[in-house]
Structure formats: C-alpha cells, structure tokens
Image 1: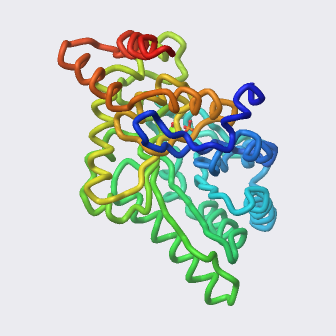
Image 2: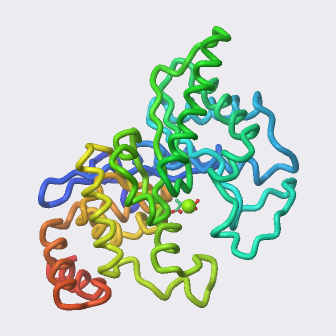
Length: 325
Ligand code: PEP
Ligand code: MG
C-alpha cells in the first residue's frame, strides 16, 4: 500500500482549503523505526515504551533502556519522537509484576497511577530517557492523566531527575517538552493552569472514547457500538480543541481513529492539526485530506448535529462522494 501513495510521501497533508495537518506515526519497537522514512511521517507522535517491558521476563535495566531509546532517536535522524512513559495495567499486564486482582482493570491501577505510586520504575525510565537524549531534544508524555495534580507530579519528577543528572555532570537534553495524554473526559475540564503548564497534549482517542461512552474497548459486544463520528463525541473533541487554543497548547490525536481516513478528516474538521497513526495509514489519510475542504466538512457535521443525527458518517461520506471522492 505504501507504494500506492509513494508520490504523496514527501508532500505535506494540505487540504483543498489550504490547511496543513501534521501526520506522525505511532511506534513501540525498534523494528517500527524504518517506517519513519517510508511512510512520510514527520516524526513519532506516540512511542509506546511499555512494549519493551512487555516482551521481557524481568524489568529492563536503566542502561539497557537508555541504549535502546538512544537508538530510537538515532533512527529518527532528528525527527521528533514523543516517548510515552510506561502505560501498564488494564489490558497491558507485565508478566513479572504481581497481578493485582481488580474488578475493573480499565478503571484501575494503571499508567501514571502506577508510576506515581511506585516511583522507582518511573524514575529509572525517566533517567534512561534523559541520558538517551543527551544533547538532543527530549519529548516525554504521561499516559492516562485524569487530573492536573497527576501531571504536575509527573512533570516535577522528570524535572527533578534532570536536575539530578545535571548535578552528576551528565550532558542534558538540548530541550525538554513535557506533555500529557488526554484519555479521560475529566482532563478536558481541568483548570486553565493545567493547559498552561502542559507543553503539549495528545488525545488518546482509544481510551477517551471508551470512557466517553462507558463502553469497554476490549469487549466485542460493545466496542463497535458507538461511532467515533457520533456528533456528541466530535463536539467534545471540538471543546478540547477550544480549550487548547485558549492557552496556545499544541494538541494532537494519537488513537487508532486518527489512521482511518474519514475519521481523520472529521478530526481535522473539528480543529486537530496533528494526527499520529500506524505508519501504513499515513498514505491513505494524506490522500483523502488533500482532497477535502475542512470548512465544508465542519459545516456538514454541525448541520447533522442541529438536525439531531447521531452519527455524521453517512452525511460525511455523501459529502465526500459528491466531491468526487
Ligand atoms: C489511546 O488510548 O488512544 C492510546 C493511544 O493509547 P493506548 O491505545 O496505548 O492505550
Ligand atoms: Mg490509552
């Protein structure tokens, strides 16, 4: 499929109305990195660091992680890589971690909650990231932040580790950007100070949608029940965009829906200017984005909302078809 879109690879995703959307890729293994060039992605918008932890039978060592993160940055040849700190718990269980029996793992002890309660592993990972990025920009984001305080704590931990590395005389990253994933509806209503403090925010649409509709993303009976193009959900996305605009906080979207062309177009119509997806989706998403007028899509979505439609999918498909799609 990548050959099919090869002519688009080095072109920006600029819509008919002249808006450019930055397309990044999701990764999690060293083996994903070669796709960076082939796909035309501008960088890695989400590097899922838990995959390294999930494929071992014990906690990896700091030196080992630092070497791996450094190789990821080398392979990215100066393109941005956003490392997400360990996102375990819920569907991602470490084989060597004592299993805590939880009635609702998706709502349980996971991601940054584990990191803040058991700081040892989190600190070790942050040190590895800082060392790997010596002399280069470092982008870190915390998963599953549900309230401002969690972000503030995670950020303070990272800044403290940087200070520790400085005192040891180690070379520091040339710059540090600290972001949060917005995966629970609560964070969209966080105080303005959160949006000011975050250097960037990335919507984890897989989890956000799960919690918005209260529908388990792992449960076959309900996971496809609610459409991402549901007007209520898109309206919520537009509200998040507006909150980020108020404070000038860069916003991206890195859930699987970003890689589906019609979803990507609707997200862009709601104001998203950065989407991160699996590498093979970049070509098809760019292809469609380059053909649309986002203003027309937005107007159609708003009309569907006003008319009480639930999902705008049929309306948007019709619009795109009339446009010769
Ligand atoms: C998400 O929730 O959308 C996301 C990108 O994170 P993950 O799928 O790894 O939970
Ligand atoms: Mg998630």
